[in-house]
Image (cartoon, rainbow, N blue to C red; front, side, top):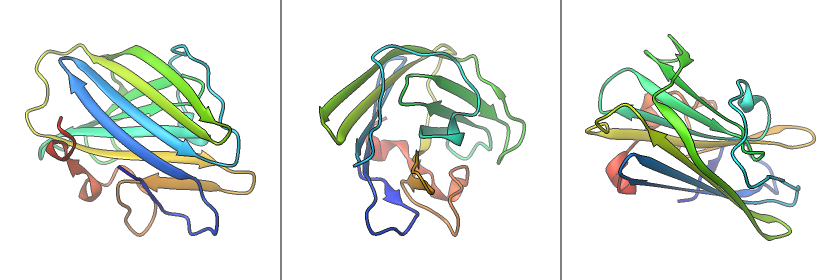
Length: 171
């Protein structure tokens, strides 16, 4: 599914997102078509906070109408982070219910990249009614570009109004 750019520029990268679940493994895939080089290794990196300050792939996952949600952050270098929030942008803490399972980067052409991140859910039962938001932040030389499944009046990926039903993605 194509992510919508928030920034209005003449020439912006094209970003697609896909998600799948098999048992306790959540697979997140981001495809980026960009003139600017995006490099990535083929191994799981380190757990790092602040990935959103540079090019970053994100996914937000909630259970139905519950106020709490999880935020996944991934860098093209394979670094990752998972936070749990108790409510909109509050109560942030590291979430140890998720662990990296696999990471891959495939450069299909000079400007086409596919990043695949797999996370293992360690906490038992899968959310009964998952809701999600997918987002990408791309650092350009002069600006940051923001992409998401949908946007509000500003790029705020935490807004639950823009989360989509997980059944739209088969999860």
